Image 1 (tube, rainbow, N blue to C red):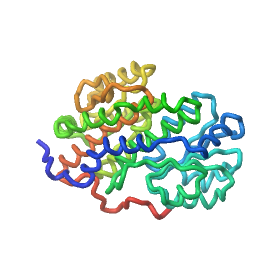
Image 2 (cartoon, one colour):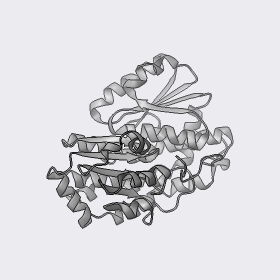
Image 3 (cartoon, rainbow, N blue to C red):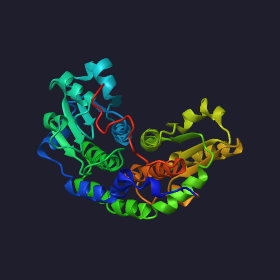
Length: 348
């Protein structure tokens, strides 16, 4: 049995604070006059493209918004901020609408982006820090209200997902009250899941016993949890994890399957669930461990609450967070305790 006492530090406290963070973020959501003007300009054809940019978990959180915009016929692209400033600077153009996500609003790449842009493209900021350079220099800023966060992104990540869904609904012309109603009960679902965190962690720890290689795979909006999840596992536990699409996993990594490999497969949207379920069966047939992560998961620790497609990404990250705690307990170390990293990345 994994020792849970060693992991009860600041990161765990932040995890358990996520329902409060979501409630406060939802209470603060609104559509300012500046945002409404940008929406009208976008829907009127003034912008040729929407550029979605961020780093790390902030970048991965943009995936659902990207798919929402593309689904509504907009030309959208996801570009890491580091790539935007050094290799795709021509996108700093009055015909671009930039959505920039940064929890601190002052990471090295974000500050450089503001300098390189020089006010040419309108920027919508999504940040947890109202007084940051990003919030101050943007055309409009949407503020998450996650509160202070000690180490690895968790409550800032789920709050960002909520704000980005709200923003996507605004850009796509959805009624604000309808959009708000979709978030009803999300904080409660997160709270219900986290209320059983000790049981979840124990179950995950038993499933991961002897595992050396960990993959997270999925399709569609689940790619947010896939990318951010693999990142936080490495950051929280010093344990190598890789995230990719379910289809990409068959193109090479499938050859790595062994009894020491675990693959978490996100069930995702209904249109792809059969494909993802087939992947789980094939992985198990090859002698490796695999579990579905989603509303119909076999194991309780990987089962999330019933919710709409738009808010599913918020719930999908929760089982991954349990993985981070379980791996730390197995290793006998405090999860999320930085040895080399810092909360704000100040060097490019």
